[in-house]
Image (tube, rainbow, N blue to C red; front, side, top):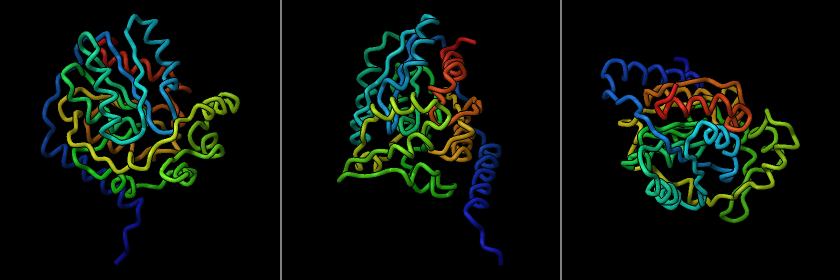
Amino acid sequence: MMMMNRRMFSATLVAGAASLISSRGMAAKPSPILARNVVLVHGLFADGSCWSEVIARLQAAGLNATAVQNPLTTLPEAVASAQRVLALQDGPTVLVGHSFAGMIVTEAGVHPNVSALVYVAARGPDAGEDYSALAKTFSTPPATAGIVFNGDEGRLSEAAFLRDFAGDLPEARSRVLYAVQQPFQKALLTGRTSQAAWRSKPSFYAVSTEDRTIDPDLERFMAKRMGAKTIEVKASHLSLISKPDEITKLILEATGRT
């Protein structure tokens, strides 16, 4: 009997999930309501400045945009940092997360101010799910080998950052981003979400087709599972910087604007 390899298992997992969703049906989610506030959360190997290109475009569209400074310490502390910003918003708010921040969007997105969720090449776990175990059923992305630790503090090596994280950006720009990379704590990676906001909130997902930090097929699986309006962007993991027009357009759709 032929053994099933990891890629075959991933394809089977995606097909099975799609079949399950089709056969059981997902609870109908409301359409996005008009929102003027956008809260953006960064993931690993970055800080809030990674949203600068998108923020400028959102502001030009008349929206109130705020970037959360994710402490990258533990998941509860990271979620709390987003919740504090959400509590300051004066009405419906679109919550956006890149990369690891998809964990935060999934957990904090149940906040009553949140009207819709946007995932940008981001993790999209279910409640209580072991994301690492899920990721292992897909191809291991090249960036994983570039994570280096100094005790409990982790960061991405310069070579991996330039090649696997920001591969479609000019090298000079990538080096600036590398210089402001915020290290993360190992404890952050052990956290699990206790709830999945995407099960009840309108959700949107931008898949990075050239991603070397999260496997694109894993992104597609998570987007399909959450029933998200999905776009595919020919970009590295940093589509929010290399393709800000496409990412901004998706966010604007989540705010109820076309």
